[in-house]
Length: 380
Image 1 (cartoon, one colour):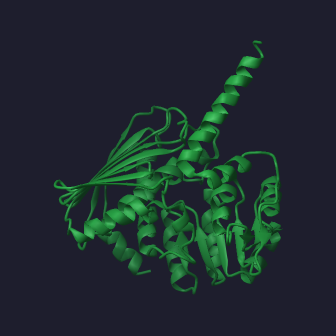
Image 2 (cartoon, one colour; image 1 turned 30 degrees about the vertical axis):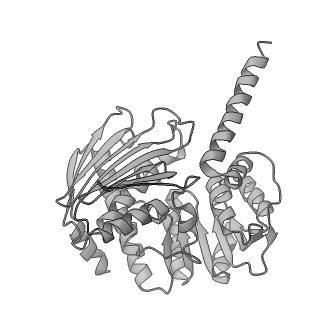
């Protein structure tokens, strides 16, 4: 009986997690997440009559988040080729999504033969693969982050200016229905000030996790990037974009400078407190409570499942049914939804580089010259 108890407890936790994920993500997304983490290799689609997409990176995100959202009518795969350094991931992906596996030596020719490339490999490789696509004039969608340092941002910006490529970024929160509604209210009620309070519970990562490897950008690029980018997106809502952002970092972790931190951002019209903690693994996955307070209304996003808006004399609560953090809208930018201006996410990545250097140098305060950086990018 003693040997059965741990199995029973583990089975119960697994069942509870499935039930919870059904309430957060819905049935279809939960099924793909389960299959993505299993050892089975089912065929989940049929080839579309126009397969014109290459996917680089076939891990859990590519399998369970990206590819299912590319399927036409939920079953026809427009993916022609796929590549991953992990052959097991590659073969499983190609079986599931009816596409052909590539060797690294075949990548450049494959890029030339498709109309769109999706990149969701490890972070250190994003700039390399994106540059290959831009050099060939092929449209490319790159999961965040697109780069991992300032030099790469400037080089890519210059390269993109000389290319016919369109670059789509995988920063998804600005595409979420909740943020779109807040933006509409911001414009409608002519708000002139915003305070952001982002409280995020992230995944617990052990010391050997690849996010911590050299060149991967640490958790600043790997995780906190989402909410830094959302801050930058909101900064662009103002007619007069803040001239500079004063930054302060408070670190609560003596071992790692890139997690368990609070980032405080101040400017005359935009202030923010972003708290990112990951001492334990949240049963719900990444969990975020975001508050956006303006001089016209206050909005509260509860894990992107509920949006509350308080106007002082009125209150509106919208429930989305499942977590709607903008994944679908971001992934489908090339076909269905408006693309974000690349200026926004390039600024996000310059700010990420600035913050990463602060954490590495143990610097608690600094200033990011926002308007100067915008002018600098325009000149490229």
